[in-house]
Every structure is written in structure tokens, then in C-alpha cells.
Image (cartoon, rainbow, N blue to C red; front, side, top):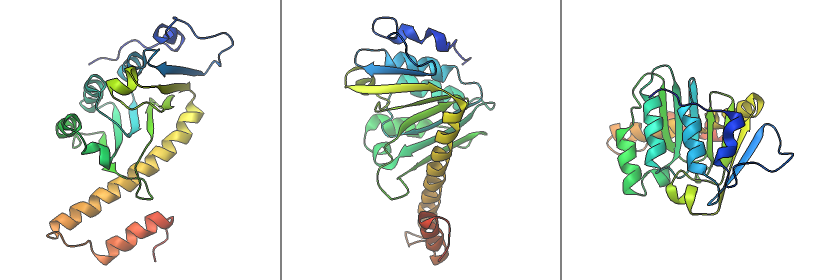
Length: 212
């Protein structure tokens, strides 16, 4: 799927009244559900991705947005990194169906499912597109979250903001990958706990990098 036209100066069309209020910051655009077209904003921005899509998402069951993500997963020229909350990834039929269809083994794709580094939920709803646009707010990727619930979504046009957010998302992703590796090792070991060295490594990650 080729990238769809995306214009920062044309985001007014997703607002309820077709415009932002006067004196709005130049590099920040905020949208509010159920009044504004949050679904349209996300679809337009994701479709425009030409280099990378990096996301950390709590609730993920919007099939339209997932179709766009899948098209990027199939494109070897677009890096796609997804970090998903473990509790949400197993909570509903739609999410299970989506998980089964992803192409994690393809070149340029990395998908991780887990928890926060403190073993709580990973509650971020954030995506970074092409290292420039950062989307954050309270909106889960579901039609209810985008069109019915009271939610906020802000898009920031700043490579600096994107770089700061990317560091956070990369650390979260790394921790989830290690969780998955530990679980896989346990499965290979017949359900027995991971070796002591693996446990020490995971404790070191949680403690800030020093093995004990």
C-alpha cells in the first residue's frame, strides 16, 4: 500500500469545525473524541510512513489501523517496532486474531508483548512516525476509544520530541523482548524456571544494568 498524502497544514479537516482555534502552537495539534475525527488522523498519518513506525500501545483492536500497520510490516523499506501490553494482547478475540496475523519474522519488523519494567501494565498509547511525528494521549486504538469515549490525542511535529520518546519506547521494547526470551527458554526447558544466569540478567535489567 503506497503512502497516502499527509499534510501537517491540512490537519484542520479532522477537527469538528474544520479549523483549530486562533494562536494554536505551530508544532502541536490536539484532537478530542468523540468530537474530532481521531480515527482519520491516525489513518492518514500511519499511511504516510515511509521510513519507520514505532509504537507502544495498550489497547489495540482497530482493524483499519491494523491493516495499515500490516502493509508497513510487509514493506522491507519500513522499520516497524511494536510493543504491546501483555494483558491486552490476550484479552479479546479481535486482538488474538490480529496477533496471529502479524509478520514478526519479516526483515525490519520487531514485535514484543510484555509488561512495564516494573511488571505492571504498559499503559502508553504512543506512536512515532518517520522519526518526526509523535502521537500521544489517552486514546486506545479502538473505534470506541476513537469515536465514542472521552479521549485526547496530540500530534507533535518535532524530531527532538520524537527522539526523546523513541528512547523510552526502545527501552520498553528491549525489556519486553527479554521477557519473551525468558518465557521461551522456560518453555524449551519443559516448563521449568529459567536458568539462574538468565534470572540474574533479568534482575540486572530491572536494577539498571548491573548483574548481582
